[in-house]
Image (tube, rainbow, N blue to C red; front, side):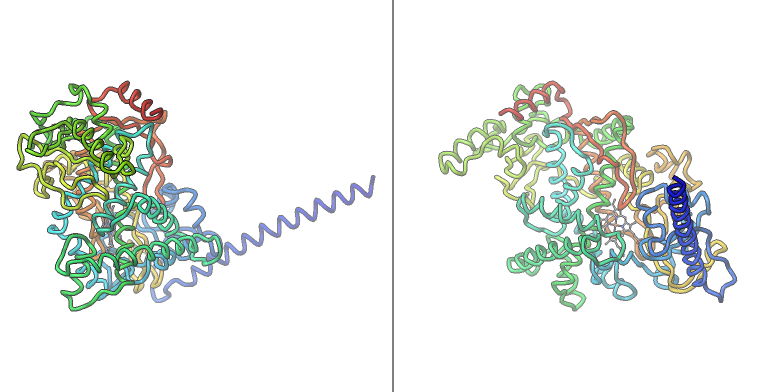
Length: 608
Ligand code: HEM
């Protein structure tokens, strides 16, 4: 008994000693790690390093950052102030908030600081990308890439973007059950980036596979730079290799068929503008630029689209005002020869089987007959089914094929004003017909929609997709009384700057009118509004992103109604971009349809 007690006591003592040693070891390593970074301060400068913690050896505060999300930065900003130090993704980082501090960083590109994405991002995206290039090379590449996103180029993409957005919104409304808005927005932006921007021909299966691979690449862009089995870096590199392989084949195919003077998509613009600069662009550069464009456009625009839908859902008065504005610009007039959805007896069938006459608010799909007479879509569909089945029974179109995406029916030229209708140059894959009815939205017309512009700006202010940008200090410099030592990473904060800028009245509120000409709070300090960064590295896709968001808002408010499919609004996460934790589960239906119609339609689709 006595012996047993002794052995219990010694076991307890041994465990306690081991635990204490471990704690001491951890505390010592924590302290040594802090000292190690303290010693790298520039002794030539008398200024102190910013306050903050460097976390644990090697990992720094990476795990805290991944787990805490947005509260990681806000809690430290509250504790240490607008400039604080930390250690993330294998590097010492100084996080900077506030317009004045950010001005110095953004305008200091190439002399005070230089862009430096985390190592994992550099390895995965490659050295030939615009984001990873510096100095003169960056300037040249930017000039080349800006052609891809120039006003002329954007004007030429516009009809296809409109077509893609319209198609996706209608498919959400036709869908059975709730959808994840984030997944829908990702599919939409991937479609726009891959098909319209890069002109890639993708089957539905390829499209889905590539979207998945792309998501894998993006998910692993920000990880520890460890190239070991199952690590994030290894997964990201694998996804990149798969995408490069696909891109190489697609680019080769495109180049073999391409008219050398054509300028239909970004790849054409890239090849041509490189030639104008007296340079041939090689395959590696093309592949990396293509992936970079999709990466830069994909998650950011998907995040902003999801936030747009979320904030409109929370603020129906904004939907009402957008509708009023569209009406005042003649963009929601009912086509007189088309019946509104509620008056159309075949509405459910028509909505299931095809697209609607696309003048905003015009609900009944019409198709031009051979002599120009107008037929309803259903008549045309029946005819098409009969013709196809007669010709080739293997190739017959079931109504399911027609619902299912890409096998599409020609949309109606608006019979009331043919000047508003035009063939869409870049039809979607496998379209049954190439033409489609649509109201021509020009860049000029989009710009004239001021309230819509305010809404988009406010969405990007309140929920900026990118929370900040990465730089590295090229020399030691002073920022608000602290030294920023040469070689350290600097991360400027977009979200925190928007949240804390004194120029915004009730900054936490969704208030699009703050950007109206009368108030224009955004003008009160250039670096208080930076959803697209600023200076030499500002986003080259900002016009494109805003066009997509505006067209999405227009299509939504004129076509759809949507409601939350969960009991409460989801929490938001910020890594790698701002997004709702559950993707935002929504039920969409056509405006004017009643919900029991949709329920019946869903039932009949589920049990054909
Ligand atoms: C709402 C959508 C978008 C947001 C919020 C956004 C945000 C940003 C931000 C903050 C930067 C600067 C990063 C830095 O300072 O290091 C940036 C850079 C960049 N963006 Fe965007 N972006 C969006 C959409 C797009 C689109 C659609 C494209 C292209 C099709 C694009 C292409 C780029 C490129 C290539 C850069 C790097 C520029 C350089 O290094 O010179 N972005 N973006």
